[in-house]
Length: 148
Picture (cartoon, one colour):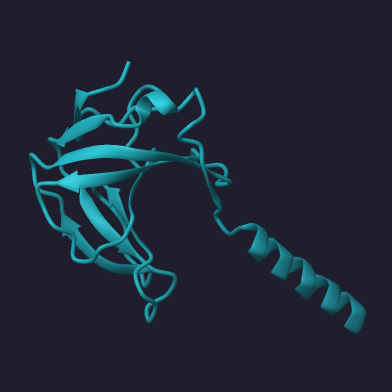
């Protein structure tokens, strides 16, 4: 009985560790490098969320999420992004997320200041995604420059 319990606990702990999201920078990969330097103007409603691991933790990164967004102890702050702000794609990250799409843009923003200086990400799901695999939602982000 004790061995079964320990085996179950070890299995559950292993599953939790395996669930941790890991990112790989794929910006130099030929499939993704044309996206680097792309610029967009914010033309729709989207909020910046400061994400942390728990309610007493420091914010680890900022992510953009359109409404309805979400709530919880992992939210350090939420601020609306100004219309007309410009964003530039700096990196493309690929994650081990499943079943969600696994691509994330690391961006720089011009036109407003974030509450803290942390990496800013746009995950290509939750309403941020456009019709193509590497496109942002045109109702929120208007493409103003792309490397071709």
